[in-house]
Amino acid sequence: MLYSKKVMEHFSKPQNVGLIEDADGRGIVGNPVCGDTMEITIKVKDDKIEDIKFRTFGCASAIATSSMTTVMAKGKTLVEGLAMTRDDVANELQGLPSHKMHCSNLAVDALHKAIEDYQKKKNEK
Image: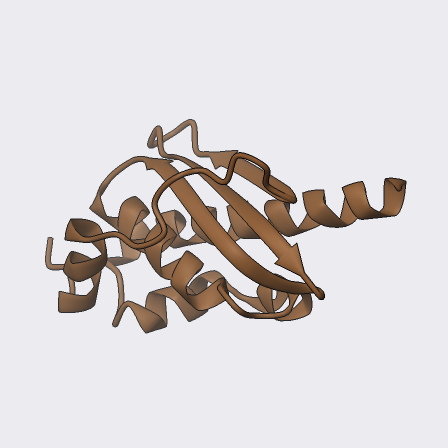
């Protein structure tokens, strides 16, 4: 299995790793088939993703896509974050093996869930 240089960079030195304790939004997703689990937490200010962190249990692709998703989402508006797709992440990573594309889908799903969680909490206030 060949990974791009960009995938290997984000796997070996992932960015935005961790958990925002007082997060405004939290999204957790998992794939029972492969066992990958991802959690993304966000801080929002003026409808923009001010800070974002992730925790992932999974393969190199899962870690790399989680890292890249957070890099791409940081500073974006919530609308822009919701518009991100698995293909956006895979393209930014200079491709993923076809049987690993589900990993990038999980990372974006976790981001979308975190944004939706934030919006739900905001609407309940």
